[in-house]
Structure formats: structure tokens, C-alpha cells
Amino acid sequence: MARNLLPTPVAARRGRALTVAGVVLCSALALTACSRGTDTEARAAGAEFDEPVEIVNCERTEVFDAVPQRIISQNNHVTEILIQMGVGDRIVGMGYGEATNVLPEAEEQFRSITSLAKEYPTREQVLDLEPDFVVAGMTSALSETAGYTREDLDGEGINTFLFSEYCGDGFPDIELLVEDYRQLGQVLGAETAAEELIDRILGELAEVTEALDAAGVEPVPTFFYDSGQDQPLTIGGTGIGNLIAEYAGAENITPEGEKPYFASSWETIGERAPEAIVILDYGSASVEEKIDYLRSHPIMATTPAVRDDRFVVVSLGDFFESGRLTTSVRTIAEGLHPEAFSDADRP
Image 1 (cartoon, one colour):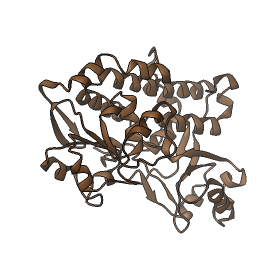
Image 2 (cartoon, helix red, strand yellow; image 1 turned 90 degrees about the vertical axis):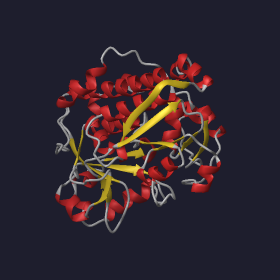
Image 3 (cartoon, helix red, strand yellow; image 1 turned 120 degrees about the horizontal axis):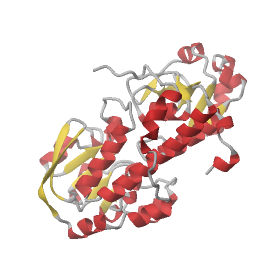
């Protein structure tokens, strides 16, 4: 079934975000404490399930006979999520373990976990650790390029999980994140912590949506600039970036992209006359260098966004299927619609 991937008006999003009305949110400190209730007992026991637990993840069926006890986390945002769910002490090794921008609430445990590689560990490293669960946040983490696929690890008796952002079917609704987190909570024996994390994410999104709706704002046509000079790499209409744009009151001007990120053209971006530009902060080029390049580009220099110096900067680390996405939503919303947020509302 074809999905409508065009950004929806701000007001139309209210119903979705307000499904969390009345949720009592844990603070960062409270979340850590809440994560160690009955879920901890299941973790400590390494309990077998009364009956095998079966989930369908990215069209693959995974069957768990027992709560996983030896986890390899392939991406740093995945590692943070597992720590937030209270299972960080079960991570026996992680990819992308040299991350510098780690959530404060997760950093102490993050630094105690063995970093296997600057990027992804080799097949030999993975098998040597005898994991029972490998969790990935990007397709590349479980691919021929990495040296092992989900099918390969299944043949070794290792369960896998891939976050739905990279399943290839699009990410039109926050419910996909909710389902991913609930599935992880179920198989990890961490249902309570998973629900607390979900509630916090949905609650923070609802706060932004309420502020934008109360101010009656209209979505701002926005170009999301990842990188590239010959061709601009930007967000398509299928990933978490497009969803972030919707919640933030931004209209993604390149929704035709069939992947979370894709290469567009400067002519296309210029013709669509973005009124704002979101810069993704990462890589060898600094934010200042990216903005300077856009200002000097003969096409981009003519756009309303560059003429009005309307740039918003967000960290790439806040642009994945994690609790960090609410930071991007809030940052972009405040940058595009400052009238909707009083000083008292700022975190």
C-alpha cells in the first residue's frame, strides 16, 4: 500500500502526538531508577521464557527461548537505548564505541563497555564473544560490507534486531519506534523500562506539538543539508528525519527520496526555494564550513533561507530512531518558530 509521505500540517499532527496526554513522565534521573524494578529480576535470572517469544522485525521472524544475556550493540545510539532500558551490563561489546557525544545519563556505563571497533566489529570479533543477541541501528551494521548478515548470524544461532528506520519500508509514524522499543523490552525482560522510555519520548513530542498548535504556526519549507558539494545529501521522505521535520513544524522539501538520505541536486533545491536550512553537524566539514559553502554557492545564495540567514544546527547523533530525536524536534521547532516558545518553556 502506498503511503503519503508528504509532511502534514502542524495542526493535523496534534491527534497523533496527544495520544500521550496524561502520561506521567520520568525525569532522566527517575528513568534510571525506574529501570531497575521487576525487569532487573528477569535480567539477573537469565530466565528462560515459559514459552518461546516470537517477534517479527523487518520482515524477519526471530524466536527467543530465553532472555538474552550477551548482547553486541552495533551503533552508539543503540547502545544508549539499551542502557536506558537497564540492560547495559549485558552488552559484551559495541561498535562505534569511540563516540564522544554520549547522553549524560548513559555515559558512565557507556564508557565501561568494551569498544570493539571505531566502526563495526569484524565477524571474528563478533563470534569470539559468543553473543546471543546482536542489535543494530542501521542496515550497514548487518550486511555483507560489515562481514555478516542477519542470515549469517542466524546460522550461528545468534538472534538479531534491526531498528525499523532502516527496514526499507519507510517511517511514516512514531508508532514504529514504539513497536521497536516494546519488542526489545519484551525479549530483554525490560518491559517496564521500555514503556517508561516510550512515554518520555512521546511526552516530549507532545509538548512541542502543543506549543506549535497553540501558536497556530504553518510548516516552513526547509532544506536538510547533510553534506556534499557536487550533490547535496539530504533527507528523503522515508526516514526518521522526515518525521522529525513534521513534528518540528518544518516542511521537508525533498520528500520524494525513497531512502532516509539520498543525493539530490542543487538545481532541485534552488527551485524549491527553502525558507530555512537545517545543518546536520558531523563529519570532517564543520558547521561553519557548510554554511559558508551554502552562502557562496551561486544557486543557494539566491534562496530565501540563505538571504535571510535562517540556519538551524542539529547534531547527527540526535537524528536517529532514539530518544534523542526529541532534542532535534525541539531545536528545529524553536529555530523556525521562536514565537511558539517562551523563555519559561525552554528546557
